[in-house]
Length: 376
Image 1 (tube, rainbow, N blue to C red):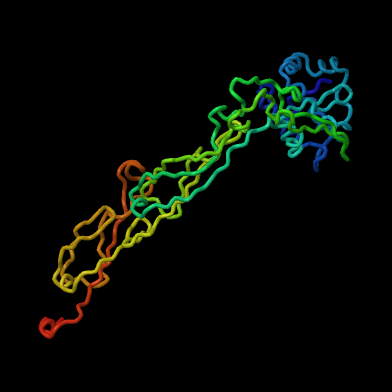
Image 2: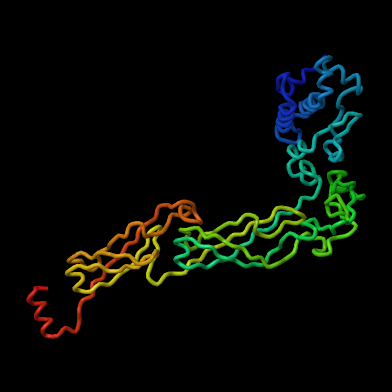
């Protein structure tokens, strides 16, 4: 009796190959015999359906003739499960009585989880080049540089791509060949006996280090590593409004990756020196000014220092100690909103000036009498 493989996998007859693969993976996970609630017979049936529908040529014949065409070819379906249980056929798929379980590499990686990594399934067999490490450094800047932005130079030692071999580790002009030990795969397979039976273990090829290629000569400048250590000078743009303790990330300015891999990042931790007259609070600046008794009583105009330079501040008559004046727009730029290091002119905080009135001392008799007459 012809089996409905589409129904077994739970897909429509017009399903794409990707849909069929996804359905097989889901069903295989669900009915795997080694899992709680698994079903060995159902699992065999699912595999049988996938062996046909997962192959375009077989699927085409199945759509024409039904499942009978495959029985005529192979002389029967899958007959046993022992080969699956002792894991003896991992590397090349499972085989029993002439019928192969031809899982694709990513199928094995998904179904068997950690075993996929152990045997090299679900991943490229070539050795993955290692991304360069991230590095950190500290940059101390002045208070005004943090407020208005600046350009600084940082000098540090780090690994960089070798100029001679362009990071490949190969001497220019040398002969490059496919590794004969692994046939260019970067990994070799060996048989190992374990308590689970014979396992085919994949390991990195020692002859080529997992690259799949061998070279007649390593780079004479870097010794084949593809990287060198040198002092690098970088110009760093400090954005207006950056605060003490914040970090600037420079992508691709960390340690060089091996054999042309991605370079790591550079993280610059900012330290802002304290100012002798200003204190920052968020986007505002606070400062203090001392005025004379006469200025407080009669009023005056004084020159007040700001991060942009001196400005005129009006002191009204009768100003008291503790009075706070606001200099609008004389505070800190909101980060990434101002100037050459942050775009167009942006909004700023304010500067708050707290006044202290200096009480006169060492008055002579005439001065004291004058104050008494004024009633002060």
